[in-house]
Image 1: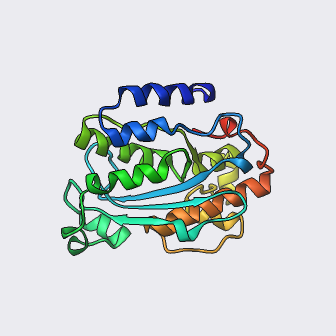
Image 2: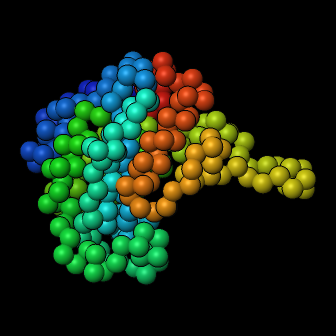
Length: 232
């Protein structure tokens, strides 16, 4: 979707939404496409899941961290563990360390959905790999409410991919021992001299994503770049 269409699309979705929480989220809109990145209200989002397929797997935790290019507002960060709609798998527990006992008495996503949408409303959401966060939230709402969730976002992985369009060396490069350039969160942070955090925890990954965007913006002089040139 083009940058110019997001505001109108959200307005249309708000008029069509049946769930009042979803309608309120859409009515809050999003920053205008011409808003400089340095002036946009940003919110880093990360979700941990039972697997990698939004249509089959489910969310087990969410982390949100509001920030801008100057500061990260850790006191306003939010974190939820939720009871998934599909079974936890051993492999996913190994990744995010959320166990069956952790989710047994956790609320379902629907119980905290209003809080999550209130936190997201009016913000420009920042993620690392949009297919996870936006895809899982969309599928979760489709299962629970019968209507999905759509919003613009900044994807720090996609931005890093723009900066490294030739990430995989050719045959000659491989023969010379060149390695592919990773755009995973931890590897991307390392290129900017950012510290290593615990991976696969929704709150620390949201914080890591916020810091990565700040570093990307500072290094590549994006403070005055309109968000419509960067969002997904």
